[in-house]
Image 1 (cartoon, rainbow, N blue to C red):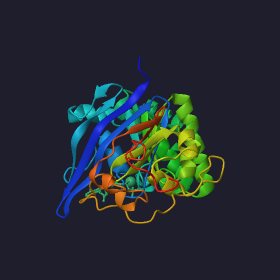
Image 2: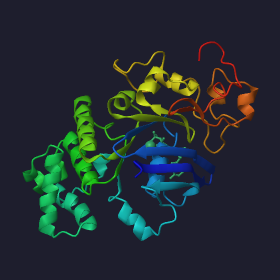
Image 3: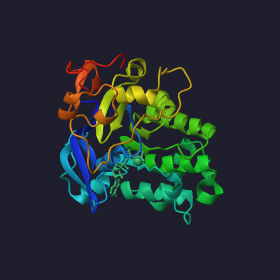
Length: 329
Ligand SMILES: Nc1ncnc2c1ncn2[C@@H]1O[C@H](COP(=O)(O)OP(=O)(O)OP(=O)(O)O)[C@@H](O)[C@H]1O
Ligand code: NI
């Protein structure tokens, strides 16, 4: 039996707008094994949320459309599935915590009702049984079951986020997608929520796709990291490798001078220049206009993945030997 839960092959997603076609996701490949957490990191507009929505087939259409590629969940190809089967997969096999979790809760329903609603959709339980299970879910995320009868406004921000996690986990999904799950929380609560997610992942062997700008979060919870730029994964590796040997010039830039797993790592470092216009992406390597090492070759040729160490891939002509770096990378 394969241990693989998610496998994405050559995914392309566009948004067709009046201003032009936004090429949001451009040939993404990604694998996540059971019980493994992959961090998806990149600047705003890189295509992280769009990739996540693609996995759930929730890219708003129009204007969005999956143009090409394949997505497998436990070996099953999902892009061709009828919508009703897809609905069963959402929240059953895969659930997602959205970027703004505070608006994810319904203010006029108790949290217990909201959790049991999800349970009832996917499991044949009576109202009462589902509500009892909802209480257990609350306890699992560190909230007393008795509080199931309370409304969202009666909870603090950190507790609301725990409720959102409880809802996402209510059906014991194989894959949890979390889009910036802790950004809206203060630092101590962030740490608690991350620890909680880590514990749950270990307990249930849940695969996780964690979207974040925060390298501290990556260092704390991820097993692997994918660095995304202009809709492509430009570097992909195990966490230790990435921090010890960041290799793509973009990753090096993000990390600043010398990243260190043990150090207090902070937000991504700003890099000179701007993200390219996604309706008019640069030719060749999409990073070439911002890259200190770029040559004519980079302008003309699109780099494919080069495996520079086991499970460490980089899209950069320096590693194919076509381009000599100008000084240290
Ligand atoms: N509904 C939409 N219509 C048109 N363009 C969109 C739509 N949603 C996203 N885009 C564009 O697609 C590109 C990728 O956006 P996406 O939200 O996936 O990036 P992201 O990496 O999640 O960014 P952030 O870190 O800000 O959340 C951006 O250029 C964005 O403007
Ligand atoms: Ni996003």
